[in-house]
Length: 166
Image (cartoon, rainbow, N blue to C red; front, side, top):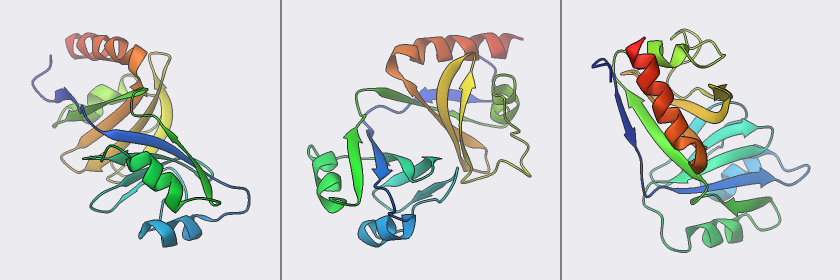
């Protein structure tokens, strides 16, 4: 693997999809959660939860250290405002960090990752090697995270090996 970046898996994250009910604005969801969810393809977070905008009124929620019933607690908080579905067993999150991360990712995604356009807090739903992913940038190192379905994680890792070798 190219020494300009590191690829690591982020095990143990709690993940859920949140879909606002018809007519419910992000600000209403934010009032319940205690921070404003992104109103587009961005990442917003507080100390316990991150939300990545994946579509209008739709977010991928990530909990760093989830309690056993965290999805139920989240669903209860958002009762009547949004549907919440546990995705913790469905996805794998990979972190790619380092000076070569952006260049390597650019070889496989069909979006502009130039730092003037895609920067800390930016997110996108896209594909890498025909595999659906949710991609977001955490910081200016740069550090990116990629969520993909668990059954495709080995294919994404293999793509990174090939991209590093090219």
